[in-house]
Image (tube, rainbow, N blue to C red; front, side):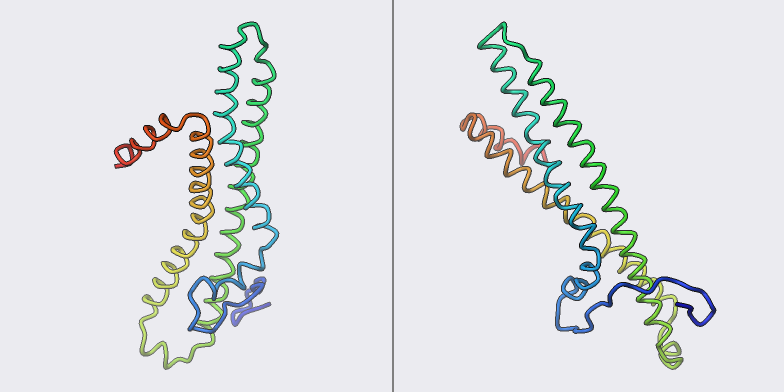
Length: 190
């Protein structure tokens, strides 16, 4: 679709919800839903990567325990399993990062196109009252902040879920040792 200057661009898939009584995320949701396919790749890849990352130490501990109990037992199955989990985690993690970047770049394009459309429909009297530099600066910083949030949320959710699963595994192995390890967390994060 050509703009006022003859430039062509792909129009956004959806618009931002104009209802200002809604929160910013609910207003942005129609735009996000245009990328269901990418989101359907990102979320499972993130969960499976985190799951594989949690299972590797578990199987290493199991292999060590088997080696101690049965000194002549072959550790080859554990090595293949751990290597396979690491490979799966690597491929899925790379896929998740690649698709997340594609999603964020596509959303950035769409949000900038929507802002451009909005700016081109404003009256000249509006631009007489407001400094153009402020509008551009605000548009850039707001889009950046929104995209950073969208990019960070899946990683934050995965980190919290990974911690919970790892804690459950640790507690199932040894409660006292797990509690001692958790007690040191506040000191190690500060």
